[in-house]
Length: 292
Ligand SMILES: [Zn+2]
Image (cartoon, rainbow, N blue to C red; front, side, top):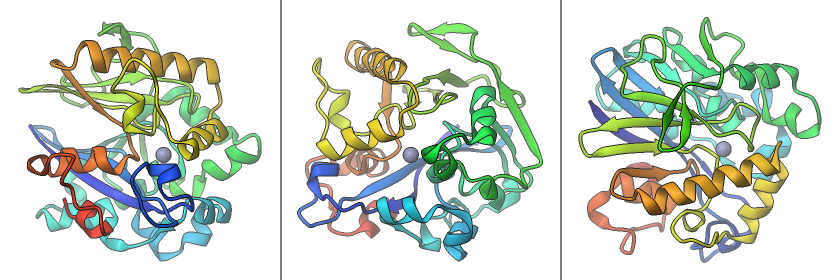
């Protein structure tokens, strides 16, 4: 099993370091950290970022509110499809897509892979179809997924995994890939855990947004990302409880599990360019992040 870390979208909200904790200019730099996993059942994509159709006609697919608020950068080179083709594969090689949730910055590439089966929590598709409220109507964009032909939905409950509930045995997927329900940011939000020879990898999606929320006993977060998480949450109690549990996991089981979130550029670079280390990463341009 080979794992590629792909950045499938760049967002530059106004706020600089008040958002990302490192930018010197007026705008911050957020990535869309996705995974491409080569398995014996074909390619498995974990989240999709923004897709080709988002790049071609953003205003027919996405909410202008989030296009501007998040400073979304639309460029074909960030799409999963473009990167997968550059790795020598084609769209039809992607057999499965596992989603942390259905927000616009995670589900945009679904329709670029018409042969793939999409795996997501049942409660997530239900709230995405319901779209009740100002944020829900703008975060969930049926234009991004109404042509998906093959869905598999899962309900919470299952076997324990480091104290979390885990949905094991996703239909058609290798047993090394698990769904870990982590509600709060959205109703059906989940992390995706992958067992590798080097230990577990946990894609925590938007369960947290900033690297220092996880690496010490006391949560540290920039004011911008704190406010963004507050604006997007659907269940504060569940969100903060899951962050506490993830923080404990990250500290107490650092030898067994490496976790990361969707949007932290420094975290992404540490996985995509492990030899650079986190201190010497070049973050002067998005190319350095995206091409990792
Ligand atoms: Zn997100």
